[in-house]
Image 1 (cartoon, helix red, strand yellow):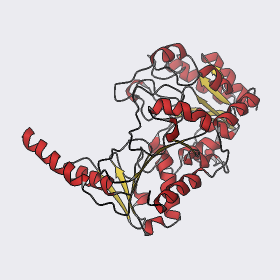
Image 2 (spheres, helix red, strand yellow; image 1 turned 120 degrees about the horizontal axis):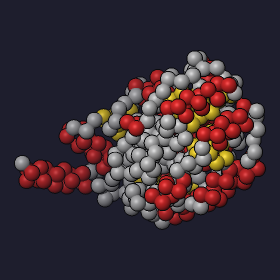
Image 3 (cartoon, one colour; image 1 turned 90 degrees about the vertical axis):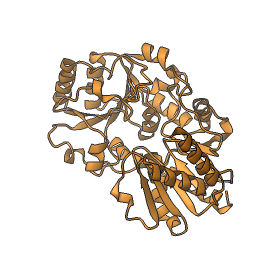
Image 4 (spheres, one colour; image 1 turned 45 degrees about the horizontal axis):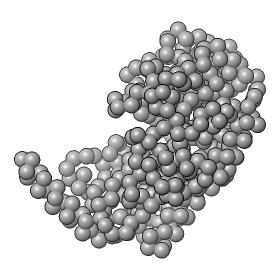
Length: 385
């Protein structure tokens, strides 16, 4: 059986290497139809690119009906043998392959445009488990300053980095949404979005910290923080990292410390960064959402209770003392309570330092990143790549 499988694979690879390039554009993101890829896809559809190109979404992990109604769009879902062949054919025949999470591989030796829109700028050290394949022409980044660090994380030449800004960050510019509509059971005047990086990866391979979640790893602490937030009329919205092993996190039913996930966002038709722009502060740690939120010019708290352990296990590509100087360090429960008080009182102690870091890490501070990326892709396609 294994010999037959090897023969089939050889035949398939031979056929794929002979594929003629067609007017296909392949898209990938995780979750499906999200993050930077979604915004670029929507912009290309807005420009009627789907009138000329078939837009093909690779959807290994679930679909979203929002894109099904678009003209000339195909979704290839699932990993059975037939669909795997369809995916490989679409990738091999496409003029452009646009991803933001899964680095789809090139098989066809003919010229194609491969571009990684990325899903986070360099902060923690990911170089040991992230490699940009040689077939990728460019990877989008935030600025020339961060390009050299992203290149280290991607294990690629710095010239492959394309500092156009992340398309998803365009959503950080705009009016707030009314959070009371979605969190009607909570009493609050101010809101904080808590977006930590993963501590234990759900694939079981990466465990840079022994704690599952910073600060509120104990039920009694979580209850005390919720009560403090209620007293200060502050809502804390907690969204664990999509890669986090959730089996070690207890989601408590508390009034002012509320857990959400991607299902909550899709169910309520809210974009993640639409929610992010609508809060009054961010709590994070070693996640690259720190860079993105700098564009909002609002306070940031950074949980550092496992910094030494995280640094010794995962480490950082950048100098964390310098880059993270725009965020208030939170080492314990009292620090978190103090941060909540400052948000409630409208205090912003690190505004100047935060803006200094923002100017360094963002070449563009506008809502035009999607247009810049779309322009780049279309210019390459117009020149036949």
